[in-house]
Image (cartoon, rainbow, N blue to C red; front, side):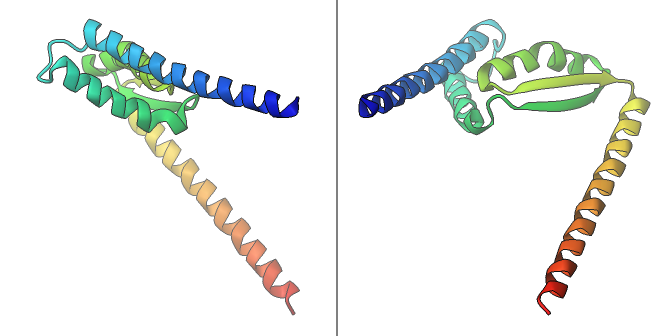
Length: 138
């Protein structure tokens, strides 16, 4: 009985994974038809590019990324349209925040300070661990 259950679960997993990839390509084809025209690439070349995105994104599906941009029309289009396409095609959610130029600079500087503090805390923790390990060996 257990053998059949494991086989059934494996089969369902394979079917689910296959339908998920098809859904991603279906989304890609929808965007190719509805938004990504005109293009210098043929629709089949675009589909090939989209297939690469679907495959490359597989290990990252379900993750979220944060994007911070200056408020210009190009970034508004990215935020309103392309983030939806990216999420549907890759399964990666994009949180796209648009700020004024000065606010973007401040946010990046603050993030860099925070990252430096985090790196310093990790280095201090590693140093303490190494010291404890070193002293416990004697």
